[in-house]
Length: 137
Image 1 (cartoon, one colour):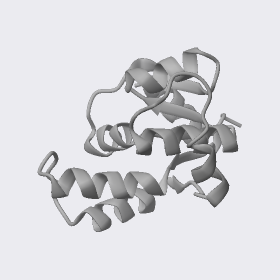
Image 2 (cartoon, helix red, strand yellow):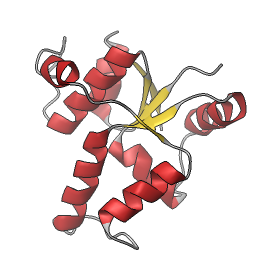
Image 3 (cartoon, one colour):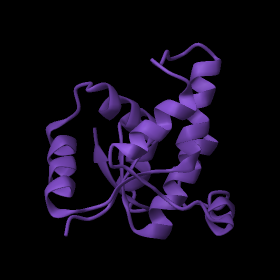
Image 4 (cartoon, helix red, strand yellow):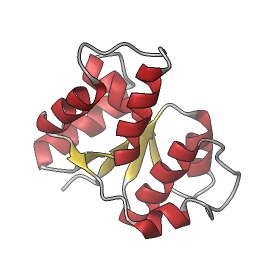
């Protein structure tokens, strides 16, 4: 079975919009699809999508919650967000990730043993330092 993947919010948006992603990212998604692997998003991504819409940084074809629910209905899993993960996000090793959503995504991936799919340089550096596993998208 393919190793589970946790999409960061940008990866979720790119995947849902059919935007171009790296070959490695597309291969990992195809592998997860073919082998029944987990392709998940964090509940914090719903908050982040809502914030991006509210601030006018993105425009979605429907209300952010309906859009997020449609992404889940299309086959994405919702990763659990336990209090322990939220606390752990405050004590991550290495270089401090400034974005609270990124910290929660990183802590979630570490707790569940998921790979993070991201284009965020700080998350990729966090993984390169050995604190998580990541797939650049």
